[in-house]
Length: 547
Image (tube, rainbow, N blue to C red; front, side, top):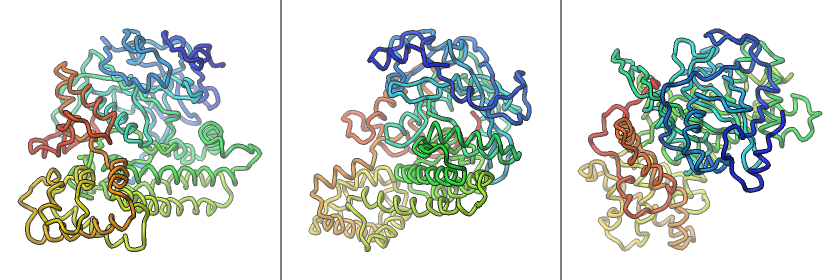
């Protein structure tokens, strides 16, 4: 299959005005083995990377929102994104010319236990298109109906979770964190029954479909499935396809053997993933369900389910009610859980090399890379410039201070830039710029206050010694400490309004999140700490995998 002429048009600066001219170049389905059974029924699929499957039409699709940045990257004209045909295609009602819809096969460890075959149970890829930069992008519809991998589920998604995915994936991109993107959010005109907290209280909710966009949706579990079944030829094909198309720098000499490119691939995945997790920890993102099937081989944030944003600094917090007992995926454990997940990927890839020990350096490299980058990032976001030998004690003191009271970690780090470094200021003057970070100001007394003041004076001394001027230091801190993140309660407010047909809150939130590091006069309410009403409300403090 060749790339259609529409991509030549786009490369020349034009825009696509007809979705039948998207210019699909479906490498995944062309180059990898397909499920030979065409029937769309729930079953185990062997010896295949995917199953061909057609989206299930919905009653009355209507586009709620679309991303101008993603649309521009794909070369789509704005008027096309406002058309009814756009809603028809990106709800799954119409398959455009050149598309070859498919669902991927993969497996995974869920909450530390092997779950066997999982696969795209409600995500259907339309195919791959070539964007204006010449890069392949897979367009995937989440909530577009059942597939052979749906198990007992209906293949649908609700507005509540779909809106959260749309908002968070776009917010992460604007925060500068690797992520899948969202082109569109389309409501279906149908209801979907979900038991939000799995407590025996199901109810109908509005249905929706998100179009997710990424160069690849391959996961750690993509390789685990083939390895678990001893389908070594399929595993080799998956790895070669991935290296050739997504890591071409590793395939410059395609005469190389798996002994050479498999360790190199794993090392690159470990490096990208370490950088990704450092970013999560920087902004307070908690994935919530870090199963190996939810880990991207490209080092992207993928599968926004019961995620949450850390508000008060609690390393033990998880937003996922399913994980409430063991807290495996709590904020503070994410670096270690990801390390374990990478080891499971290594175990799968070890089937392709004679010496599995050759993969150990990559796994060990993850820990070194994460620790070095986390320390460098933390020192930089505190306005200290480059790390020095004496920083570790000060950093340990910071973690102690942040857990000593209920402190909003987003506001604390952002407003720290306003704290004076002059040693002559009073304690009250030192604390005043951080007032917006205290959930319970009455906690700021006695030993808590004394420890905080001591740390702030040490911080100021280290900042002064860094050699950075005040303006330079403030700019450096503001580049790493966002003022606006998609706080859990902000997303819930947008959901509540959208379910009533009011999109103003959603649009305003999205607009603010496009510039998360900038002060935005008039938008201060989007930077406020969590209100008391959201402390225990479902959707703000508690989430589940029900979507």
